[in-house]
Length: 195
Image (cartoon, rainbow, N blue to C red; front, side):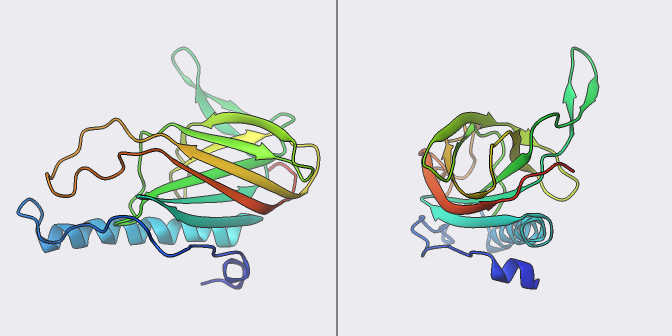
């Protein structure tokens, strides 16, 4: 683990999520091991983003989820126009907020979510709330968006996650991730800029 990551907050409280039941006819021990291996690989990639690229980051358990954030300079991205991908620079945006949502039981990234982020400035004023879409990134999938904020320093991030609407297999373990989640990260050290 890099010094930078170890110096940042690792504010994971004890897990409250329901564990994956290993006594199931639908999934073998090997399959559950493979799911956890995927979760470990994602966790390592998100750890790299947190430790080597972000100005601040954190992660917490929240019910069946493990929700994390990483903040850094605003960055350009490809977006779909009518029929094509078009590169868009960040313009006057000066902060990128990346959100990771993982299954607390196995650590795998959870796709297909509606993720809302609220940014609160150092004086407690809400700067806005917006949906963060799924973002392909060279290192790690995450939900992300660029923001325009007026100052650096300690901000708060409120993350709200609606449960995914996708189908689930396994009658024993498949009813996970079925409730919304809401978590707030305080004293997030924001450094403004663009990549």
